[in-house]
Length: 222
Length: 299
Image (cartoon, rainbow over all chains, first blue to last red; front, side):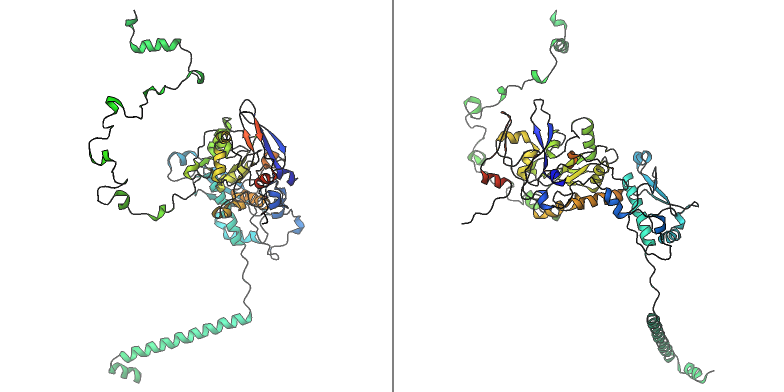
């Protein structure tokens, strides 16, 4: 299929009306840099992206979802269509007629618990992190009026949602081993010793500056 | 009786009787008023407009820019680094999505056929001058929200949002390089064909542009289509639209060969518009040259 597409080009028929009555004809102009020599294995049908969403978001059965504590499956950034609800409203602030009339503010909303595109172990962490942006019903709200354009604000919302999930999905650091704890303790003790020695030396300095009578009193312990 | 009417009224009465102004009954003014170059006669001769004595009459004026000895203007002003090499830089005059949509709506561009630079220049809505180092059209994102057409468009530079706009409607956008000779042919194909020279084979991009046209993010024509598919998908994720299911459409997938300048015409062909004939080379060496398959001759 791709070879016929790669060799496909149009033949412009010179009609008397002047506009190009174009017919499609498969023929063979191929230079040294023709597409089937550059990329012989590639599929030139770029409009066919059905397989890609399956790569990013393979359909899962409910049984495959492992409990929160176990898996550390990463979030790959894919947000399926229809999983977010968008609302378009007027932005605030200065901007004259444009800001008064055009719905450039975008609010994205989704229900966290039913979002199966987020790995299960990340969901409670996300809830904890973003509890100020979550409604009573469990919907996470993200709104953006950063730019003048609605489509850019939408992209900003999506970017922020992804960032939130990725930050929530940072795995906990592993608990420190015995050797590491020991090392830390030794370090702390050493630091303490240094501090105390410094303190004593400073105190001695101050005492030596004092007058003879004061030193006498301090020595005798009055 | 005729003296009753003023000049304006006479003119209006005349115009009412005349036929409507059309392309067929409009004529240039004759060039009677043009002055003769030869300076002859009482009014053109004698000193021939040169005045009396001095440098002006005696063809001894100093070089252009000289101001009699003081520092001239063109040397007083310091150079600024921001415009260094401005005369070497390539420019891509913009054409917005808004303009494109308007043209399609007004039937000035046919969206059922692939759109390339020749199509845009033929509409006369877009002009570019190859002599001013214009290397093609830059598709800008103004009109993103209004854009609706499903098109196969080939431009020379495209912003990310413009690519997103075209692809979100199920269209295909490719960025493609043309060298100045090919650009001249594309910008005015009729004038080019009238010259009677063979269609040139397009050169590959120079080093500084090779990265741009090999990058699938820019939908470069030299990039891998499999990577373009992935980028298409990722862009849809970035801007939050779903890629529409497009049934197999040959028009959308049509692409010129990297050496090809016109759709349907090969390099080396001579298009004779008058006799409605295309002349094709027969010599195998010439054919090989235009296909870029010429083998080095062994001495």
